[in-house]
Image (tube, rainbow, N blue to C red; front, side):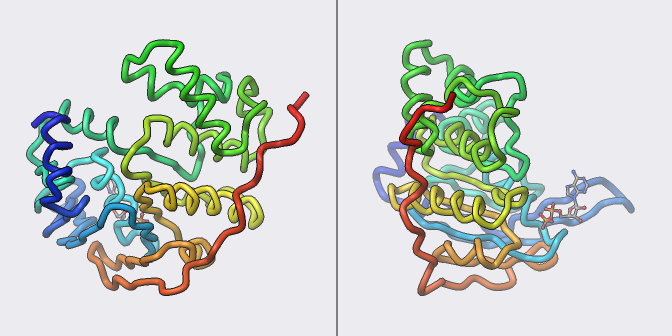
Amino acid sequence: MNAQSIDARSMAGEAPLIRLRGITKVYGEGSAAFRALRGVDLDIGRGEFVAIMGPSGSGKSTALNVLGCLDRPSGGRYEFMGVRVEALSRDDRARLRRRHFGFVFQGFNLLARTSAQENVELPLLYRGEAAAARHAAAARALQAVGLKGWEHHTPAELSGGQQQRVAIARAIVTEPAVLLADEPTGNLDSQRSHEIMAFLADLNRQGITVLMVTHEPDMAAYAHRIVRFVDGVVASDERNASPTQPGSPVAAPATEPS
Ligand code: ADP
């Protein structure tokens, strides 16, 4: 299954964006085997903003890795835009991941000695895009997260909140359908956390589907739907009728940094 036929199917409106049925994930073998996911059923529509909560060890990150095609389920069915992901080859799965998913992690995961601009360009480099197109797209993505003027700074020269904004720019530079965020505010203070949530909420308003693992109720409150995992299954799945409405995301600095 190639990417073109994936898009053709989605345009035909045949399926929800994501459908998980009976997804299992077993780590290890024999007596050491651990069932991290024990039969997850979940549908996610295009444009949703979903918070995934639950106690530590309940399978949230494992589920996010399966959803983002970083990891294969041990069993069950995963349809993304109507395509059976678990049946794809490793290469096709990687292609699907690079084309449709962006990732933001708790630890930012930026290259240390590399400028913000180059960090953001990286996914485009993997895709083989030409330099001029990479530069322009990365500059736009950095501007979108309020970092115009900071392009040539390395992560060490940026605050934690700014580093996470670079990571968000890197995640959206490929214009993914889905943004997956694993505890994106876990390393940030309260004010910076709310700034990051304002950006995620803003991206969602622009149409990106956002799936975010968090254990912080204040952050989950931005989502429109809260899915709770317990012991490797979905224990509850609720609409949030009044999600937190962020103010406008932090504006670009009026003056360029020195
Ligand atoms: P959560 O994100 O809810 O804290 P995880 O999905 O990270 O939970 O982990 C679920 C369970 O699977 C945990 O008990 C964890 O120890 C186990 N686990 C996760 N990754 C691995 C792995 N690579 N090998 C073995 N066990 C793992």
